[in-house]
Length: 260
Image (cartoon, rainbow, N blue to C red):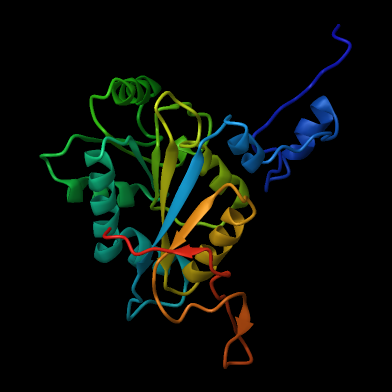
C-alpha cells in the first residue's frame, strides 16, 4: 500500500535484458549516480588498477576456447604473475580475491601456491554451508588469499576485501563493474583498493583487454596504471590485412613498471 516505490541497483543495465524486469517492477531510471561520484563523496574507495603485460604465445589455435585454455588457464607465465601478485599483496596485509572463470584454472593456481600456503577455493559445486564456512573463515582473517569462480561475481559482501586479481579476463561491462565493486566498498582503515588486470597479447584476448580498459576509463575516479612499454598505439585501427581489424590499446593514462 506504499504511495511511492524506489528501486536501487549497482548494475541496472544487464546484457541479458533483465533490466527490463527491474523497470517493470519499479519504473524507469530517474537518477544515475556514477562510481566516481560515490568515490568523491567517500561512499566508495578509489581503485588503483595495474595492468600487467603478458607476452605472446606461439602455436595458439584459431578458436576462442583453445586460445582461452592455453593462454589464460594453462599459461605458466601468466599464472606465475597471478601467484606472485597475490603473495605480495597478502604480505603487505591486504585481503586478496582472485576471480577465475574456468574451474581447472582455479585448481592450477591452487597447486602453484603450494601446500605451505593457506589458500581456499570457492566454486559452485561446493555446498552452500561449505561456501559460507570459507567466507566466514576469510572474514576472521584465518587466511589472506581467496580464489573464487563466478559464484563471487555478484551478491557477495565482504567490505574488508581490498585487492582483486582478475585472472578471468572477459569484456562484459556489467560483470567488470560487479567484480571491481567487490573491493571498493568502504571499510575502517581501507584507503584504496588494488585491482590487478592483464594485457593479454593473443587473438580475441587483446581486444577484450582493450574493452576492459575502455570500461575503466569511463570512471574518472578509477586510477589506471599501464606498464612502461613502447609500441602501444592509441585507439582502434585497421591492420595490414584488409579482411581483419586489430584492436589497439586505448589512450595513455599513467605508466608504471611493477615487479609483479
